[in-house]
Image (cartoon, rainbow, N blue to C red; front, side):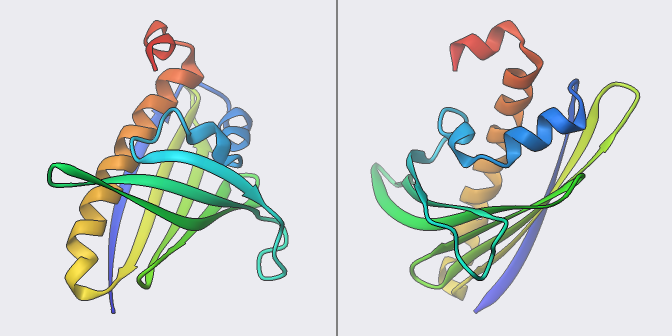
Length: 154
């Protein structure tokens, strides 16, 4: 089992409270995340009592095919300026995300740190797919939250 990390940053012309509220509900990501096909809300767990849990179905590109895969995810609002995300997927793939954000003179600066744990043979593929999908999601999230005309096209 191996770990790898990536970091993404995005500036938003919205208040931190607006960004936090959006980040805390995975249902908001369906039209933004390029891999997500559907999301179903699950019951809370004792392990993460504050977190909202979900069953997520992705369609992952694999050459000319799309592999349909399901996994469990959770979003935990650990503080006013931080949200933790988790994803657990077969075979032994785990993503842990820390969204940290701060107010700026123009709105909010978001730093997303993602740790990927995956079997060695899958790690590169998982990191590449996750980093591309997360970057696209943040970009679309900014457009949507800022109310730009492009948001109507997604």
